[in-house]
Length: 220
Ligand code: C5P
Image (cartoon, rainbow, N blue to C red; front, side, top):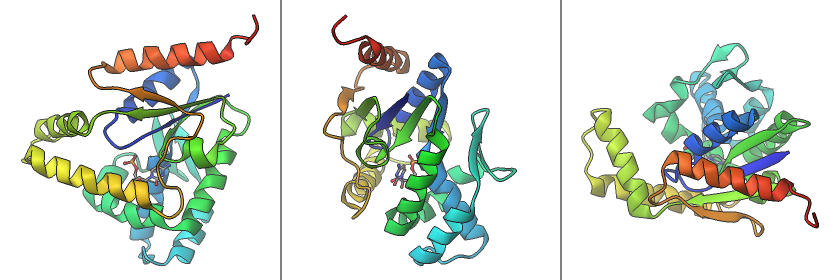
């Protein structure tokens, strides 16, 4: 069974997807981490990020895998490196390139084949797994998302104003919504879950209820 969890950055997708997968005993596929891993290796190997064909060939040659909550490219654990600001900004052109998205779509389908998986991203319900049994689009108000990010950055000692965080978030959302292929939007049959005011635990409870409702025979 496949459950897709899409939505904008800061809606609480990652923590919800991770916790949901752990509670169900399913695999968790973080597709943002996969795009980040491609960007990291492109930087390492000096592949020009604007050369979509070369980046797509590179992506196709990589063995990206998830083990014990970590992301690997081959035997290399890239979980920490893919979160640096340098990789985050390199990921944008990589994720915008249609040939790269095609390669990643096939890779994501191969990883999910035959297993129970919670997959998280922007286009999982709309493009990659149109037949997923449960599709969720997680949202939160822009201010709530910015406040969460601001709290995280402040805790890490990064001096950013709330306005700076909101501006960056608006730019990211705009980029996610308007990329020519794989633009972020809820699938027509996705359930919208608004996470304002909910704890991560409450979000997961709600998702579990959705899955249980979907699993019950319709005319029982
Ligand atoms: O979610 P995260 O911030 O890790 O995503 C990293 C980058 O990958 C973002 O630029 C996001 O737009 C992109 N992405 C994507 N499609 C996905 C998942 C992430 O384009 N399915």
